[in-house]
Amino acid sequence: MRDHPEIDPETDLMLERVVDVAPELIWRAWTEPEHLTQWFTPKPWETIACEIDLRPGGVFSTTMRSPEGEVLPADRGCYLEVVEQRKLVFTDALGPGYRPKGESFMTAIILLEPEGAGTRYVAIAMHADPAARGKHEEMGFIEGWGTALDQLVEHAKTLA
Image (cartoon, rainbow, N blue to C red; front, side):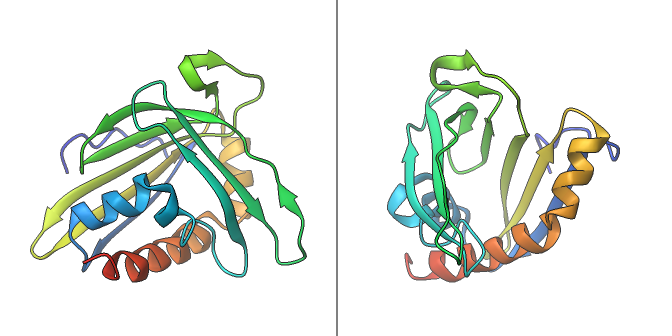
């Protein structure tokens, strides 16, 4: 896959899968708040708010609610790179306008490449150190991001 960064197994987690949805539908699901809220958190969690300013330095923010009703406030991050229907890079290390923030959890890279009638989907979570990677893995990165991808695919099919 082009634009695939070098993965450091000590600090990075990756999910890669070919899905039966065209890249433009996955792009819409990732970049339009009314669609992102439908799939972004693995059920029974919910994404109850989303703010997207789709440009480098623009805001990416989600607010989630647990099954018990606890609201996790939005952590406003920003986009670092936006390549239409191909690549999204965002981080919680910087706020909108590249404003430095305190503690960071990760930088995420979403890569989309046409493959047959579908898309090769790659999601990479880059962490500052092995401890942060380990914490994310223990939180259920593979299961959680895999479930979210299943939900994304299901929702994206309704956009066709």
